[in-house]
Image (cartoon, rainbow, N blue to C red; front, top):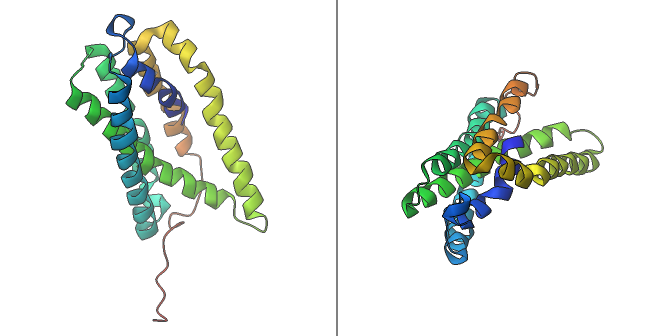
Length: 189
């Protein structure tokens, strides 16, 4: 979530900043509608769908697609920044796709945290794991403004896309049962 943690902090300023500063110059009301209505709807749908698919097939089948869904939409922000596209449909579509991917991908992350927390102290372990997750979002988020000022919006969003590479590399090394999270059907009915 290295890239996503930085994108989350800078997406709204990108939409709000004047075009002379590299932003898209949208009003606060427009950004609120795009993120606060469309974004929340698509985030929720992505998370629900992710949970349904993991419960149907297990985490093993969906980990890579969900990791990609979480990170690939970040490239759309880079495209908006590089092209300076200000079309409402392009911007709204980018936010909807990114938020859907965030919800969809985050489902895999949460299920993996549940797997890590198994054992007699699962509540405490889950609390610690989510604390480390929050730290993993906060620290990169803290530098996102500096990175954007240094690189400009186009360079910043390319950096965000490149920041997904460690997750793709580390995915090869994490171990979990492929069917973890899969709902077991009871025949007692």
